[in-house]
Amino acid sequence: MNATTTQTRHISLDALRGFAVMGILWVNITVFGFPEMAYISPSISTSGSVSDIASWMASFILFDGKMRAIFSLLFGASMMLVIERASATGQSPAKVHFSRMFWLAIFGLAHFYLLWWGDILFLYAASGAAVYLFRSWSAENLIKRGVLIYIISSVLLIIGMGTMFILQSEAAQPGASQEIIDEFALMMEGLGTSKEQLATESALYRGSFVQLLTDKLTNQVFDPFKNLILGPLETIPLMMIGMGLYKSGFLLGQGNPDLYRRLAVWGTLIGGIIFSAFAWLAASGGFEIILMMNITQAWSSLPRLLMAAGYVSILILLIQRFAHHPLLHRVAAAGRVAFSNYLGTSIVMAFIFYGWGLGLFGTIGRAEMILFVLSTWTTMLLWSKPWLMRFRYGPLEWLWRSLARREVQPMKISG
Image (cartoon, rainbow, N blue to C red; front, side, top):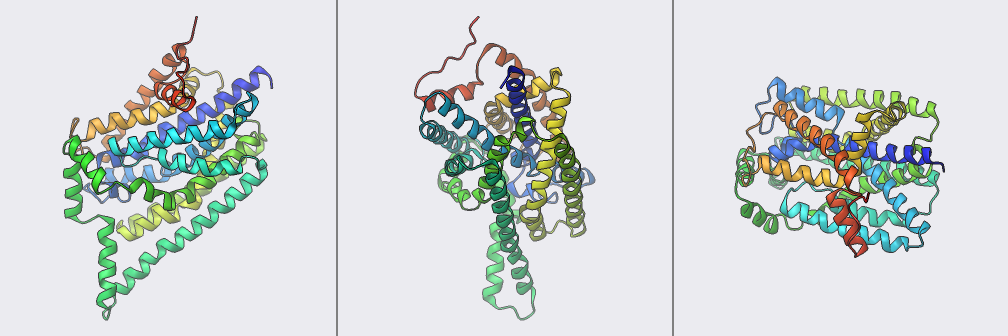
């Protein structure tokens, strides 16, 4: 492989990761600044104004789940790259891989308990440990089986979530038994959307750090592990697909240009139409919570994969077209330090919104939150490249690498 190919390969993976880590914030900022269920519906914790609804729709149609899917694909690709490099340098791939996953899990748990309930690192560590079993599969097998598992998981999720409608209908019948009514009431209580529950949640996040930590260690102590019940059903197949797309050269920009163009057009178009239809259905249904749970958590899973494929293809075409553009290299730099940017964003957003910081939880409109997103994007683009001109790794990448290798890694670029 010549130097140009190697450079393109790194630009492709890093720039894609940079786009993904920036896009994830657009989605996540809602649940930094509002109760969890505000992510599901624009009518929760906000006035439901035109700007609230428009902001929710833009996030749902353009970003929701797609950035996470791309991040999962890239995690699988990066994992495969690390395994290959370990083998090439005479190291034990298993030792290198599982050491990285162990420390990633520790980072994830610290992220969850100390900063933010929406951590994905622990889930990625557990899923990454599982997909190591498939490392020797061919690219075709990884992609085909990954897509098949993803489709089966999505269908099962759609069926499972659909039972909410059945229970809702049964409880609304004139002769409904008390058992059915109680079961429906318990389900609704579990969603946490009553005024009292939302007020309690808001008060918690406006409280002190000690209050938040105490709640995590009492009421939410097992939540990261509970997330392993359903979370891997999406994450594992996406990582498998990412491993396959890396092996095939697709994520490195080595695929058929016509394939990139077709996926860019049809994946984005079909997925975008379906998501737009779901957004229209949500608005037509008055953003009723059970409908919203099904739309956002189940029905959108299949078109999400289409849009993720379309986005990746568009980005690869842009990367190839603007390979030497300074902005692209800044995005790639943000991707090289994506771990630091991801956790750094949590620190900044928790400080802005939580009571131990500025305490703006629940006080900023959805549309105004976009200003925080744009300013954070700007910060990522401004600091990442200058840092990497002086240092080999981002600060948290260096810490992760040093812990995984059990020795302090060289940080500063000599000369």
